[in-house]
Amino acid sequence: MSDRILIILIVLGLSIGGYRLITKLIEPKPEATPAAKTTAKTTAKTTKQKAAPEPATTAPTTAETPPAPAAKPIETPQEPEEIIPPRLSDQKMNELFKVSGIAKGTQGSMVIINNKSLQEGDELEELRIEKITCDYAVVLYQGNTYQIAPIYLQAQIK
Image 1 (cartoon, rainbow, N blue to C red):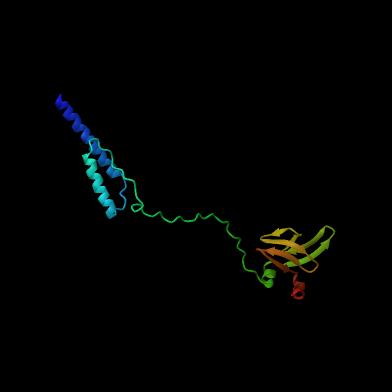
Image 2: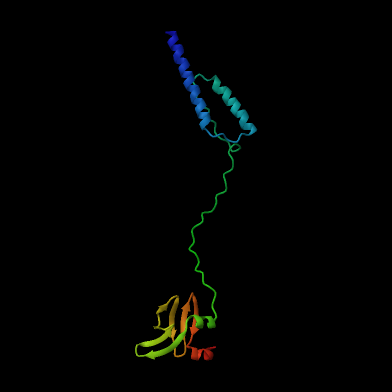
């Protein structure tokens, strides 16, 4: 009977020792300071003296814990700003959009640009007709406002 008790104690001792070994492998090791090393040695000595040892846990002190990394401010995604291309010269606008004529009628004003008849509010490519007068058309192109006129009136508008 004493052999059975001895075997049970050996198995129990091995299982507890195996538990300690596994927990030491799993637990992350904190940065050891000289004070922490002496605390760990004294803790190891006291755990060997106990009959039913439990895993050694020590409360971390402020000296043992590294400082927390500085928190980065949370960046909220911002809507991209509308990029407005540089303003073109009036000469370049008149080259891109050739005004053949301007007419006023009973149904409103009309301008003929690049051989297409347009009224106020109509769009041609990126060009929007804002206003039509007797001599020129006020247009919005790539975020900029321009006055374009028929070829025969361009010298008078400048």
